[in-house]
Image (tube, rainbow, N blue to C red):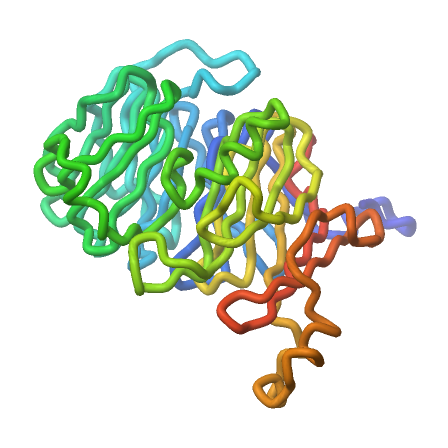
Length: 373
């Protein structure tokens, strides 16, 4: 924006900048109101959730295909390489493809770098205790590194017949599960990278995250998307309890290949009601809640957009909520149902859901602040 008086830059620089190649991942800071994005333009960018401004950025020597924060928030890890899921042409393979970097959060300087895979690393995650870093590769393997021992290689999880796309750690950091393009879901010992064939031994495991597309808790959403001819591409859980491995309660947010974002209760069922919003032009590549679960972020692979959703506690669920009888509560808390039942402005949709006896409002404000330049 230029000043009318003298033609100078009235804002002191650009309002914002964006990825100019497909976005590959989104990760939320565990302690601060910030989130990071990675893209095929070789950049990692940190954004402020409140102001929605770019905070810092670094450009590396290869496309970046995934990003994740350490639980203490001091560092974040990124996987290098160009995923073959994007519709845009990839840069030729270089010596950095298949490598990973650990960046200091304060200034994005490189704290550590290594390379064991020859193909792109497309998913990464730290264990809940921060001791292990897992990186999934398009070579059908998942690499485990000891974060406390200068990222020494623990082992290579081999069982999949197709590129691994999603990984989750158990809450006790002992187990890892992964799913691939071939529709397989496998389990491994996180301390040794050994395959776990005895599935009955894992029936009581509680998972720290819910990103694998073929788990029990996501089965209903997977079938519902497939019924419409779409593919489930991303999911994330909020409000999970510690009562059991797939205990009821909490919300499950999903994204699919049609660009739809859906919200339902966890665990999802095929016949369960769900809310739906449309905004992305193409597949949703990432769905994630921030640390305090007040915001949800969805990223489109091809539209280069990140949409910020607000998960707000309904003001009507206040001090007197416990004193209201069931009939009064039903007057202002409609059951979760199809988004078409709600008439809202084009730029905002609101739905009310009761989760664990608390009333939440899921609100979407379409903010495409990561868009084409």
